[in-house]
Amino acid sequence: MAKQIWKPSTMLNPVPVVMVSCSDNNGKPNIITLAWVGTINSDPPMVSISVRKQRYSYELIKQKGQFVINMPTRNQTFATDFCGVKSGKELDKFEAMKLTPENASKVDVPLIKECPVNLECVVKQVIELGSHDLFLAEVVATNVDEKLLDENGKLDLQKADLICYSHGEYYPIGKSLGFFGYSVTKRKNLIRNRKKPELKSTVRKPKQESRR
Image (cartoon, rainbow, N blue to C red; front, side):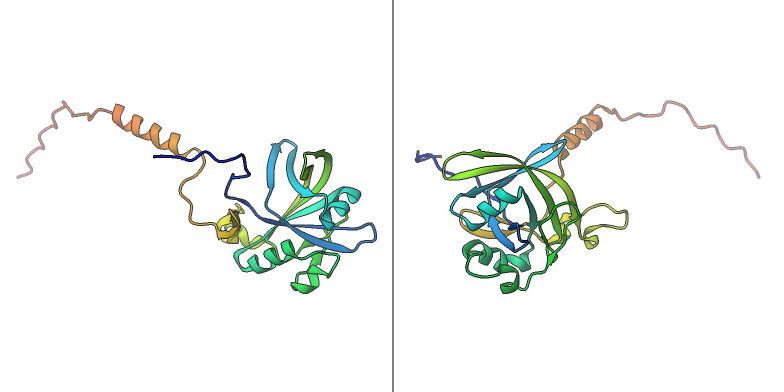
């Protein structure tokens, strides 16, 4: 298969797409849509978001040192796109998209009530990279809609019908193709089954006594 060599670019796709809520020091809320978001640590749980300095939300996040990552669903795709192309300087995005700002449990910025999962974050470090600044933040609370839990209380994110972003387009997340580690589990089972020889009994069954 022939391949072309292109100049370096941000070609890593697909990526998560989220609505990040924030506010100014007077409590005025805003939403910014971001696709350059990632998990960077598990203990403590930490995430990163990349924001251009020119964006209205940049100063809000930097001054407040807090934000909430809200994970949108398929039905919220229009609102997700709208909040990414409109500026909070021009209008109230919560009001325009009929979204509800709800008090968070640990941070002093609102979360989006309609989103099924919300990650409350506190900024720990800001790294200047060039076109964007990278905000490294600790997740101090996670809000999960009870409708995403099964009868055993286990989270089933497939019920959320989340979306992702790939090369300028929004896509739904499809059906599961396997679980983490399924390739190893499957291989182990195959090896285990191959190693088990078919055992043939060499013990003769006793003749039943005649009852005639």
